[in-house]
Image (cartoon, rainbow, N blue to C red; front, side):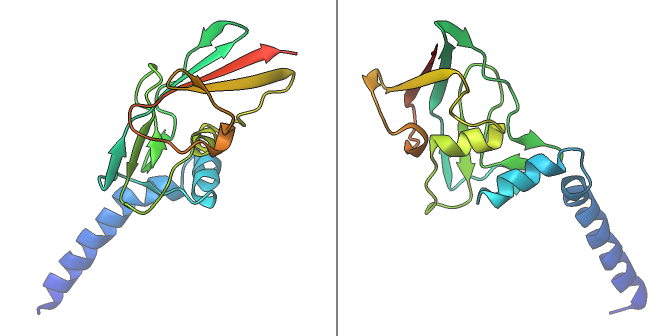
Length: 152
C-alpha cells in the first residue's frame, strides 16, 4: 500500500474518532456521563437495538403531576441506554445487549436524582397495582409506573 493511502486512512480514522469520541470526553456533561457509565450503563453515540422497549413513568408530588424532562440521558456524543426524548414520561430503554436487565433505579441514576426525596414519603403503583419494589422494579415494555410523593 502506498504511503499516501496510509496517510489518508489514518486521517479518516482520526476524523471519525474526533467526531464520535471527543464530545464524550471533552464535554460540559462529563460528570453526568461519568456517573452513568460508572453505574454500569452504556453511553454511546447511538441507540442500541438488541433491546428496545418503553415503560411510562408518571410522578405526582402532593397530588400534582410533575413533568418528566425531555432528553434525560442524552448528551453530545453520548446516549444512555435509558433516556427520554420528550416530556410525556416515556422512558426509552435501548441497549445493544439482550442479557442486560434495567431497573427504575437506573433511570434515576441517569436523571441524577435519587428516587427518595427529603421530606416526602413515596409510594408506587405499577399497572394500577400497589408495588413495594421501588428502585428494584424491573422495567418492562408498556409498564405504567406511578411514583406518588406525599409531604411528611
